[in-house]
Image (cartoon, rainbow, N blue to C red; front, side, top):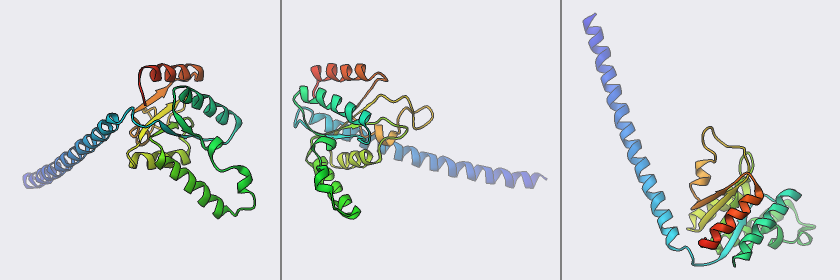
Length: 198
């Protein structure tokens, strides 16, 4: 019986050591990831004030979305930012007539990806039970290209328990403006822009 418990104890000790070393490796990976994120944000912060071309990433599939996009864009443009808003500045509907689905996909993706790369800043609408898929791709392109990324949210719905936003989205952002009242959100953005540059 004693020998059996000694074997169980040895196995438990080995398992504990393996788990400890795995946790240590993971914590070192986490520390390296955090350091990389902080370095990216520090680099982005150094460029604040350089370049005022904004790509506005947002859903634009109904009247309410389009109207609110225009309201936020007006705030940015009032402060001298040059904004590319796909619903206003993208491919005109007339140019899309007679195109196949494959042609439409290529045209829209090529234009929007090019405009993201030309921008200095991406300003993203994070509303929705989950953020718009296309806007997430645009954010990913922007983040990978070293663009300054900002977001805004008026939606009370959350993606994950105890996290108001998916960390893979909010982690790309220098700042997220958040207010469940759209008018107050616009005022907060105005106040920020009166004291800071994106």
